[in-house]
Image 1 (cartoon, rainbow, N blue to C red):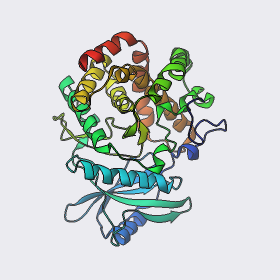
Image 2 (cartoon, one colour):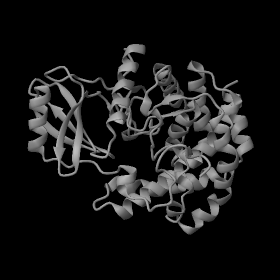
Image 3 (cartoon, rainbow, N blue to C red):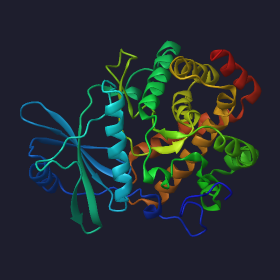
Length: 357
C-alpha cells in the first residue's frame, strides 16, 4: 500500500498470528512464582490478567504490596520492549505525578530480565499496580467527565513530548494508518453489508485522510486510551485515576491518539459528535488543537472501528482459544461503525471547531 514504510505489514503473504504478535505466553503459575522470586525477590498471590501480546499477572504480597508481572511474547522484538521501558522512564522524568505504571528494578538492578520457553525467549518486567477500576466498569461518563478524559490524554502526551527511540517506527497492528486495513485478507473478514458501507470511506482514507495525517506534527503517542486501559477511582467517580498498557505506542499525530478514545466512548451512544467534542474540548485546554487536526477525527474514528472489526474477526478465526471479550465487543463496535459512517462529516467537524474555539 501507499502508506507502508515499515516491514511486513502490507506484504501479500497470508497473515498469521505470529505476524501480528497476538501470541501471549502461557507459562504455568509455578514458573511465574519462580521468576518473581529469583528476579525481583517477591512472592505472593498471583491473579491472571488479560493480555493481547503479554502474559500479565497481578501479584499481591503478604504485606499488601501489588505489582504486575509482565512476560512478553517470544515474538516481541527486544528493541520494542526497550521502547516501552524508556517511554515510561521518560514520562516519569517529565511528569512524576501522572498516574502511569512505574518500573521496578530487580535484585541485581536490571529492569528487564529474560526467561525461555518452547516458543523462545521472553522479556520479563515488573510494574507497579495502579489502584482504581477500569473506566468501562463504571457508567458512561458525562460530557464534563469526557472533558476530563481529554485533558488527561493531553497531559499524557505532554509527558511523552521529546521522547524518541529507534523502535518507534516498528510495525504495530493497531496503527490504523499503516495500510493494514486495506489488505484483501482483512477486508474479506468484514460482513458483506459492512464492506459495501465502508468502500467509499476506505477510498477517502487512502487518497485523502491518511496523506493529510502524514503532514501533521508527529510524536510518540499512547494510542490505546480506551475504557479497558483508562482507570477511574470508583464506579461513582469520573476522575481519571491512571492509564495502563503502553504496548500500542506509535509515532503519530495527537489527533490519532484522540481518535482511539473517541471511538471507544462513542460506542452505544446516540450523540457521538457531542462525545468527540467534549474530549477535544478537554484536550484543547491543555494542548491546542487546530482545525486541520479535528477535521480528520471522524475518519480516524471510523478507521479505528474498521480495524477493530478486522483484527477481532481475524483472532476469532485463527486463535485456538480467543478471549471471550472479542466476541462480546464486536456487536458494539459494528453498531458504532455504522452510526459513525452515517454522520455528516462537515457538521461533525464544525462541532469540533466550535468546541475548540
